[in-house]
Image 1 (cartoon, rainbow over the protein chains, first blue to last red):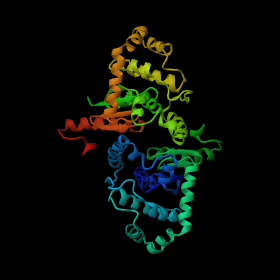
Image 2 (image 1 turned 90 degrees about the vertical axis):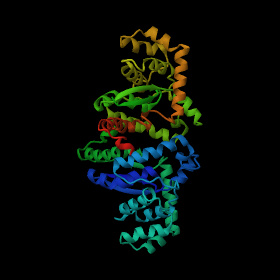
Image 3 (image 1 turned 30 degrees about the horizontal axis):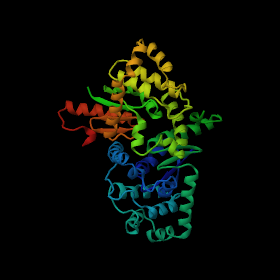
Length: 212
Length: 212
């Protein structure tokens, strides 16, 4: 099965758009998703940015909110501009890392994104995240405890460092093999690329159609 | 007729994608184009950037070239990474300002973009631009002379200042009324917005579907 790596951050508004639609879109293309939660803050700081470029560049920031409103309408998603941006999300990111290969990762991630970008809730609070896990039929207390272990904290730091070495500079970012696609606007291109790569392989061709 | 403002720069690689396809795409939607050449350099400098963000952020820069290769393949456009980037384009920008409301603006702009991004030529040279005008059946010498008058130089500076006051921070940028759309990825959204606004007006509705 062809695969797409999905690098995302719960604090990232454009990650919201991709989290909400990637499972349906990938299923339609027959592509498997490797969920790759990482922390965007350390990546931006390594690039010399103290915070989101949407705050550092006020012109771009002003634009982003009108763009998000239209994009959410286009995709049929609820939208509320968060009262805190970028919102800290280290707690749910750790939970996502814990669940990255479990069947609930998609549903969990969509619910966290809705809490941030539709309901304007503080997603870094255990009291907000626990009910999400419970509603999915999961052992919330146990998962929250495990997500706060040193092992998971270290793994999230390591995955963030891996994002940096792969050349990631924003979220969401997709990889199909070595090919990098940046931004929700490239999700469909990336899925098509993954599907075509597979098809080319099946035909015995050496390279995918888009990398010739 | 609904209208879209198209703010573009011949040195901007993402403007290349939009210049090549906007006339066909706008015609298909029944939308008129107001061509708005402006200089991106002074805009970026006003935002504190000495040059293109694709040079200032090397990770983003590395990505942009693989993205451009795939985008050009998607749109069926030729692509050669320019040996000079960002390429100075003040001469053809002045010609474009002179021709902005003339029927040759689209064909002229496409040819300049091909010279920069498909043929890797120095588009700031009169010897390169004159044959483009001649091939369009125009009086090249006269147009080049007029484009270098103080009046045209001042108009291009004024149009660039207008871009800044409108909140433009990159190219291409589209406006439909007050609604701003940034990047080639938003061209189709912007055209649809323009067409729907017109349709809503025809139905006697007060506001366009996307701005409710």
